[in-house]
Image 1 (cartoon, rainbow, N blue to C red):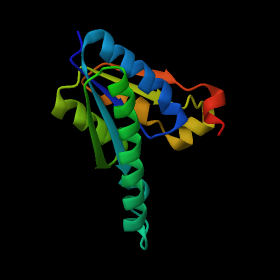
Image 2: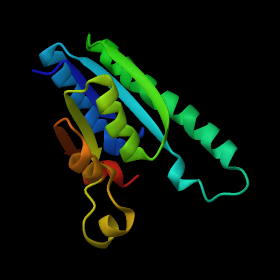
Image 3: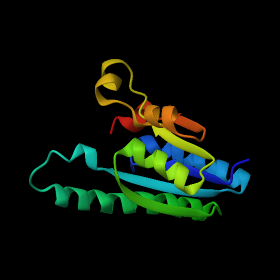
Image 4: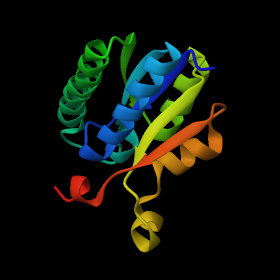
Length: 147
């Protein structure tokens, strides 16, 4: 049913539940797990000074985040591919889905509601609305996101 499963990660506790689900699904379906971190350049494009330093630091953070997913997948005996990209988060995720033939996206959501969700927007919601593949969202436990 699933040959390629994508788990976008930002390295946060909120994404850990999604990583666990994605690894279990990949193991069950003998699928390749794709771990993707997007350095969201849209958030830093207005910076005039120092944006290169910030983006470089975020790329390193991204490498560490996908390496953690790869390590967990390796321990579970799941084939894994990793990627760190720059761009607008939801657009980069949707592009990756198309380019890599992803059958399922498993991603975490912070579970924000009301004004917080309205003001911040939701990468997961935008992916759900625009991706060509099914998207499973995994809501983070409140204890995990209060760090």
